[in-house]
Length: 262
Image (cartoon, rainbow, N blue to C red; front, side):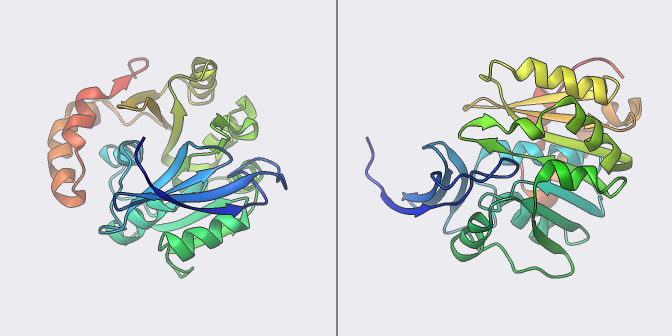
């Protein structure tokens, strides 16, 4: 086992969408220049390399940025679950045209993200709101070009963020050409149920991307079909985005799978 230093923070809640729990814990660990956030378990919820704090350290977060292959110039983004703020920081620094709202139920996570993971203070491009993710989505129809959902409770999907009703409301929260991006775990016994629910809410317009080696399964759901030209030009778009965002989009395209042709 590798040695690492750990600081523990006893928390007041588990994450993006669940009810608060006074016995749950939030803690950080540091190993070989990488600071990690853990919520309610030893699973790494978020990670930041101290030398490059605005880089996406975890592969699954890089994969979640695959939405740019279909919607490269969003204006409004809604994120459910802050964690260490990796995606919020990346969008803030690399996509300056985007106004981002992040929903996080646990105020302690927000404090830790800002004090220890360098998440910027609120301004006209970034707002962090303390709220329950499902309720916020339900109350904000047609408000986002991109809706990202990354909500776990002790290594499991938060029930309020993976129901059929939630995915229906998620579709309503998107603008005309909006994209839903969901982080699932491929080893979750209910993962196929979640995907079928997303397909039902989005009329089958769903693609998936497996983030190796840890088995995160990223789901992209489209409010309206991006069209055949978008699929045919993915390789060309991937090369351009690799230069703009320094992420391995060509590799993503090779692994991207349409659940059903659309």
